[in-house]
Image (cartoon, rainbow, N blue to C red; front, side):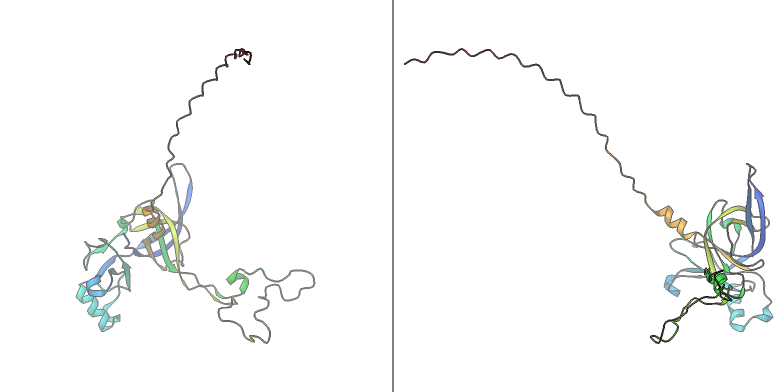
Length: 253
């Protein structure tokens, strides 16, 4: 299904396989995801499932948000997240139903979206992986500088989008094709192997991997080579019979 879950990044731990291999995993605690609205193509122009997560006091809601939750008869949450659906996905979902960790299975590939950790003001070497200046040969105070950033009188300016120093982190990022190592349904936990974006305590969105789904639908055409029957050995040529000498008849005059 294209529907995902909203959870909280708890931290990292490790688990051991039956063979004794240690696997580092990130623990994601899934909030109670409650469906607030099911959108359709006929009514809304696109098909999607809107969910809320967590708990929020009604006093902190605006009148519009309070009316939205009241119409769906759902306890107010901390936010709203939509998941696009297609085909028959989400056909059995209605406002008020819940989505749990059993939506995913062990070994499934997922895409995880979150807000990266803030790094503050960073230079070009840390922010953009620049090589920096020379470390020897009389270089002074230019070891970590960006170098030239523009041209001469023409065009006489720095083009927008130039990679320079600045604020690093706190951006929305999606890491694809991570692997679910374990699903703990009683405690609502997902154990994910891979680089889950965000700091501990941050909210993450876990979806089924799009690339894995496309790869599964791809038809692999394997050329079938027709079996060529081996050629029969050609019979050895028979020795030619000696030609009899033609008798010469005398010419009659």
